[in-house]
Image (cartoon, rainbow, N blue to C red; front, side, top):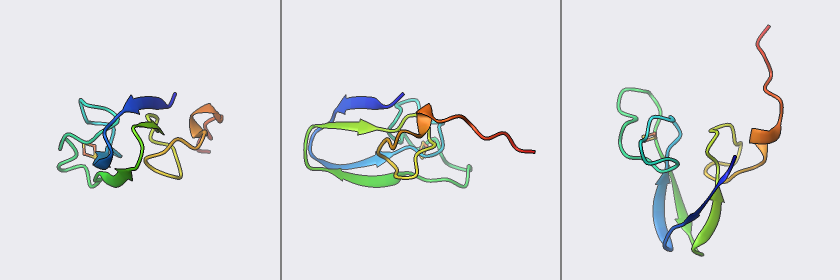
Length: 73
Ligand code: FES
């Protein structure tokens, strides 16, 4: 499910690796994963952020969490 956070306006970093203890924001735990945070700038305090890491529009939710996962053949 997406997260609705009260974050102040300004620059933030969204976690793309799922290892952060402060989801959905980066805490530096991505070191060695080959992934990195996605920078985003908020212009308003309330924003819906992706928490499933499947969004095509990081860091914002695009509804991918509600779609069936495709199993590899
Ligand atoms: S902790 Fe996940 S991208 Fe930084």
